[in-house]
Length: 234
Image (cartoon, rainbow, N blue to C red; front, side, top):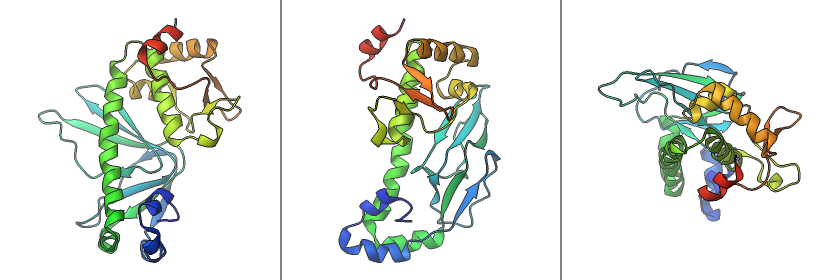
């Protein structure tokens, strides 16, 4: 696990890191692109599934609205946890966007990592960070203008999961996952036709483009202040 996720390794003091690397192993498996139906957790004490590679999206339908949540490397999933949307019924569907590799943090793994409290704290922090990132999603959905929502979302994805060595290069910063117009619409609480129009506008203004792999490439600098971003758009 520590080889597969260097950030977890960094959470453990160097003096005990080599020892931890020997024992903190977990079963991992690959998922093919398409709909994914998670199997039930194997007994109590299961910490969840850690995304090592690839991207997944969770679609939730509440009161006939289809918001979506994007998951990528480093995210800790607990897909068996029910949605607490009482008194409303929520339906969820998981889709694998690209080949994804998940590590199974089962009961055995949970028992072993108790020897390294720093590692336990790092995994716990992953879960907290995931819940807090939802605040950004809420904030994006409240921005006025679909073009602004798209820029903020795309820069967030590029900064979090993109190749930081390439950031600031003349050819721009690539968003490391293919996102359809419909998925983008679900991620920013918009309609697909509006997203298509906004992407065209951003492309015309030179703020985004596509590379040879079909990935969205961002140009310029990330928007840091709303008033500056608004003045840059028509």
